[in-house]
Amino acid sequence: MKGKTFIKLFSVIISVLAVVSCIQPIDPAIERTEALEMELLNEYIDSLHNRGLDVDTTALGVYYVIDNQGEGPYPAEGDTCVLKYQGFLLSNNVIFDASANYNPTDSTYSYLMGDNQVIPGWKDGMRVINEGARAYLIIPSNLAYGSTGNYYNIGPYETLIFKIDMVDIKQAY
Image (cartoon, rainbow, N blue to C red; front, side):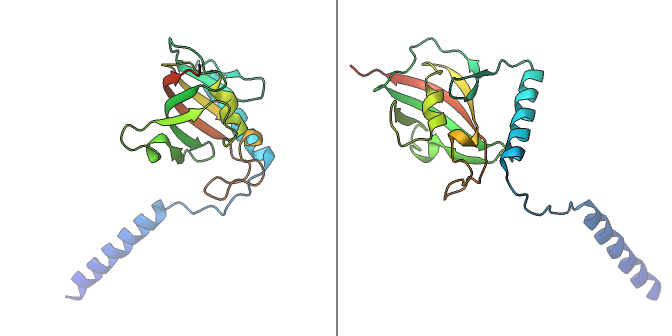
């Protein structure tokens, strides 16, 4: 009887040790700095280039990749952009926002070009996406929420990536 108990106990200990050895230690919170953001951003841009993607930059400093060029017009001040999007944090690839949060019926979001209620990088990046296009905007923190982050879920010095499908552009008359 003692032998069977010992074998069971030994098996349990070995199983626990095997499981524990696979657990990765949790890194302490890393302080977000501008230098760290620039390092991650440059690595990301280099990785896109290495995959053969054409990364362009707006005059303001928003990076973008056109995945699928549309055939419609580009938005102008006063136009309404109807789009589907997801916003990711570059540092951990977590989705922090999506158009489906605003309109669960068809997952679209309407944005009035010229609306100053959005971050400067979003406003600038919308100018390079025409109707029917799919694009990725890569917005450094200086064109988003800067050194403070926002009250919701974006930390300081966080580069944002938006996957955007420009569904329609309703032109102002």
